[in-house]
Structures are given as structure tokens and as C-alpha cells.
Image (cartoon, rainbow, N blue to C red; front, top):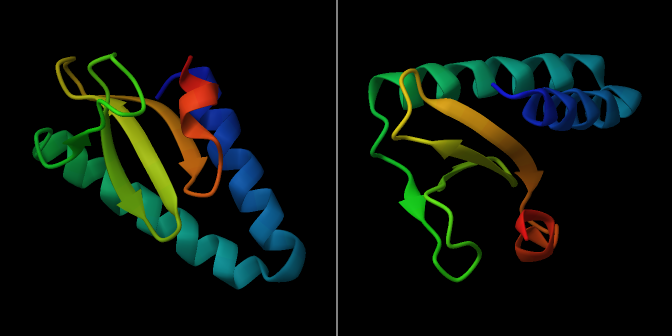
Length: 92
């Protein structure tokens, strides 16, 4: 996971924990499960040519998107973004 993705995840968890620490723990557990799943099955995400020309795959987790490079070994998570964010602007 690149530093920006760690920061994204930390900010998401902090935001959730402000209201409910247990919920933040559950969300973290789910993200960790998905990271492992992506490592074992790197091609399960989708490309989004409408959002970026980079070879980044997208995989949903709740209302968030994990953006990762499947062609690296191990899989490299590059961002963890909210689905409502302007992802196209963030990536360009």
C-alpha cells in the first residue's frame, strides 16, 4: 500500500470512529479482507477508462473504492476513496 492509500484509509477510519469506534473496527476488518482477496485474485477489479487512463483497477468496499495496480507483485493499493468523491479530478 502506498503512503497516500494509508492516509486515505486512516482518514476514513478516523471519520467513522468519531461516531462509532466499533463500526470503524469492522470497516477496517473488511478492508483488510479485501486487500487479501485482491492479493490472491488481482484481476477481480474493474478498469474505469472513464475515470483514468492509468492501469488502475477499482474494487468496491461499502461506499468506498479501493484503487490498485494489479500488474504489480504484490498488488499495490494506490488509493482508498469515497464513492462520492470526484475521483476523476483526484486521479488527474
